[in-house]
Image 1: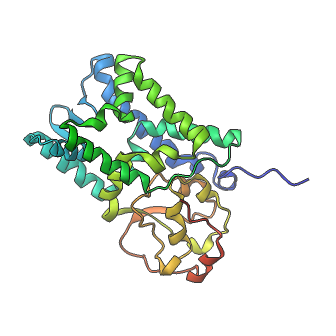
Image 2: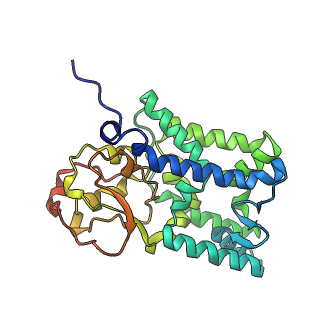
Image 3: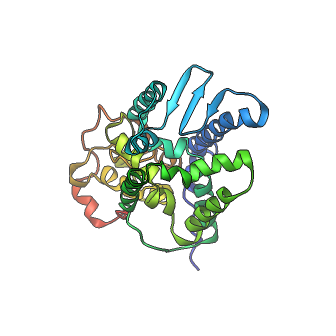
Amino acid sequence: MSATPLRPGAEAIAEKGWLVAHKWLIVRRISQVGILLLFLAGPWFGLWIVKGNLSYSYTLNILPLADPYVLLQSLMTGQAPEKLALIGVAVVLAFYLLVGGRTYCSWVCPVNLVTDLANWLRARLGIKGGAHISRKTRYWILAATLVAALATGAIAWEMVNPVTMMHRGLIFGIGLAWAVLLAVFLFDLFVMRHGWCGHLCPVGAFYSLIGKVSVIRVKLPAREACNDCMDCFAVCPEQQVIRPALKAINGAPPVILDANCTNCGRCIDVCSKDVFALGSRFGGTRAYGVAGGRGADGALPSGN
């Protein structure tokens, strides 16, 4: 009888300890929950540290922050943005150009808590397979939201955006918002692994465009130590970003430059060989360690 396969990260836990093998996941959860609580502290407890929501907020009555995706939709409707909104967008753009656009998805977006829970439960229940939807679909949906804004003269996407609806639901109570979140959860659980965030969400698509030239990246300082355990691939929400950097496909340097990497850090956590680390896109990016031709053996699938 064959041994039961180890769960991803089991070797890392054995070698580094549970806390170290989950450090980025823990910090990320603190960030997501903490940011959400900052927005809820006002309506729930009367502590108005942050006023507004993730579309537009005002922190300590000093710092405006505005979602550039919402601003773009607003421009499509013909509305002229206010000065504070432009300042808020500039601050947000500068931040995500530094740390990576999809960092919003894994470190800020509260819906990621819902989809990660669905993925965790999917793995525990052993649910395999599912629908096939191209990852490019999210870009078509992104374009459709802009067309909708242009055609209707309203920011139509924000009426059904799960992030916005989750925020409203937490403040005003059960309603359509919870039905939408449940639909996202069930879709990721039964229909498609990382289906919403990885294949459909136009917000993630937009932030990936911002993050194409971002500075902070996942690097592979010890990629020659990779033992093909596949744990990084198993936990990555955007599996297609790993293989080029890990296997030096077409001479790719040891740094993940794909704009859809969310910088979630799970590959760093689960790797027992410490192949991965957070760093910058500059310096030490010369291909080394794993021969470029080795990637042709298909050790890591390319993803959708």
